[in-house]
Length: 449
Image (cartoon, rainbow, N blue to C red; front, side, top):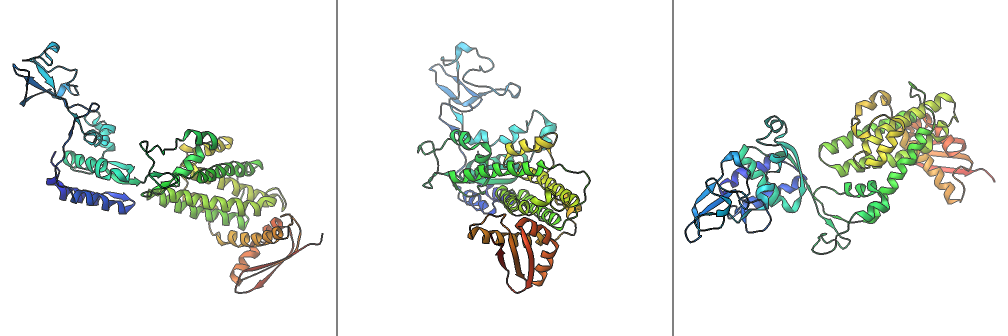
């Protein structure tokens, strides 16, 4: 098949394609520009897709390669090793004056380069093919850019005068702990079944989803353990958020609740942008970073209020915010932790989390409008300092802090004032004082035993 004649066109096709990551385009261009021969599409192998060709045999049983016997299009596909050409009978196979099938099979890439057409049922379902071709995405490894990707682009260019898809997401290899490519021939492949049984499918999927496009990823069991810990934390945080009865139609009256949802809206926007750029690892990183802050900071700050420490209205605001955040977080984690998110969703929602719409920034706009995202950060920083002091003094985190003095800028102290009630409750603080200063500092005095 001619390829050298189309090098310039194929370079242009590569520049039309959206590469993820972008630098992988250089590998494609390097391959195209370095071509020095056309594509031989035949192979002498036992397994493969045979060429639909026979040859007549002369009186000595020698094939006449100059005059091949071809099947009519309405007979295709055919297998020349078992099917018989028109005008012959099966008992003439291999006999002088009879026929023989072509012994070659197609090169692997000659057939797999048609995967978009096969999946779109080209020439079988014109309506389907017209709707799905060119396709959106080709996900594949970087080692077969020069083969699978290149030949698929070539076939589509020659047959359809277009790209076969608009995006290419290029993944790396999985490496063993010594950073060598995992390969069956090397015997260094780790099979997933024991890991799935020990840590669960969500944990293994978390490890895989953490791999960035274009980068080789070393197998790391510790990363799978992190995924399991995350899945368990999703369960536990969800149990808390759903353990307190919610009141429908409650207004979010508390600054801290609206601040948290404002930060969540920002995380949704970032994660959405990452997914739109085919950067799934970045979307996971954003979702996970918010979730741990949500658990470590927000949950600790509102736990007492949610249980009614500051009255019914303040509690209702906390519970409403918790459930709103949980709904969004389950959908954000759905692609990465499909089983635990589906389980939690079934506790309080109809249908499947995987059929629920992806969250949007506008979904949170009405509850977070005018919120100051910094309020949660300011309160969390002060609470963290108080808790650290208690831990260093080997005291319970619920130990009474007789007096806490927060030094910070005037702007941040004004924000702190708006969330001071939650801070006092979460830190079990008797007297909270503030002093304006250039640098953040917290002085804690514990109550006498």
